[in-house]
Length: 593
Ligand code: PEP
Ligand code: MG
Image (cartoon, rainbow, N blue to C red; front, side, top):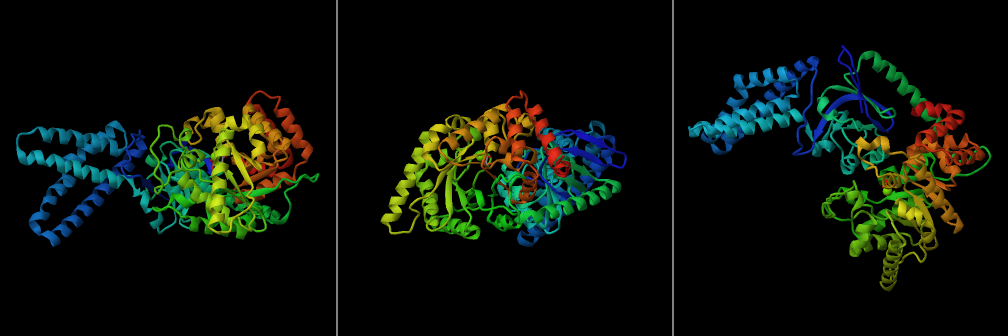
């Protein structure tokens, strides 16, 4: 990320990673995680008065809070106990202390939290060394008051996200998938964060909720103050703090144009996703939350190609039992009928954790006990979900797939547990699916390379490119520092996709792609050309992807894939992909670049 410009009007333009499209303007609310460390930041001359004002405001707030506590203590315990807080008020009102912070701030040009901690540290050190007991105890007062001021400088606590009342732009170091799942779309106009990438589960959740989002902004949570106006362009990954009025005007027009174009695309909802020469590419939906299900019909996708079941586990302090899971899966299938719903078994771990499921901390969670590995290690826990899927699938159009399969043995082991569940349900006299189509996600290179061994044992493949790219290229999918190395068009990825397609087709099983590649307009012709049978994407992306497909000839896709296989660099392949999109769907290329 680079800070592009600061202009005399005080506008600060930052480039991050746009992960969920849309334009929003609003007042920032900065969220902090409890206990989060304060990072140092250099400030410009122009920002010094702003930083001093921030400090003064935090002092007023702190004084107000301490007086409030003092009053409560006086009421409850009497004046004598309340007088302890006089010492705290003395610290806040100590002009020498306050002036020293301001002087240091002017000299060092660092954010006030850092300067304040340094000055307070010196006071604490000095006071703890004096002989006088009374003065020594004042060190604790300085420490307490400093903590309170820093907290007031920081912003809102993350757990208040669902208590926001006024529309705002939410700013944080990071948002967890469960923070994001709790977002009220009418209140939170956009999300911006220091870290993250397009395939982090936070980004996936933001797209699902249709909230514009930009991540990978490095230190935005320290640069912006609550209450400042922020403009967010989630498509371009641009964030402007204190935007100038001319820019706001340009953006208002841009947002209007985008809206009109997207509304036009939505009229495609009932048209088939087929190329000009009649090659049909089904588009199914990726669903993170049941609230998205109405969007499937609205945006013209068909059925669910990936039901991420983690939502059932992210938020709750208690685990969803078999009955609840059976109900949720049945409802999803009933709402999509007669189209198919592919339920993915639990994919916890990596960057998705649940407060209800205890998982031991790991140094490298993406390579750890994630997804099917966790389920196979905890068969009692896994069986609850498998039984629920089998029960929901009785008389419904449901399939199931396992995530993060690395070898055939895991598939066989999972299928064996599935069979045990079926037998148990039968014994108990509970209706369950006699034949449940079972597929696997191909998202680990070892599975892609041995797809021909796995194919005879499954009914379909679904390629999870988000993870396949991360594991093939050894690039952490949520780390913005290596985002430039995360290359969907790396030739190794194309070779693996091709290999999985050939292995699937040799056994006459369909091969879908459900990673973000399938929702990336310029990469869709490439996937079709590589032989992928179906795409599964977040519902709001469906109109655009349908438009891309409808403007293509199948022969162009084949030709692109053939040529790409002979090109050596990811960048050159991407250029070819963009050239084809520029020729066939120029308005879409314009919209996304
Ligand atoms: C993927 O890895 O591409 C995928 C679809 O699964 P998830 O993003 O949930 O890991
Ligand atoms: Mg995955």
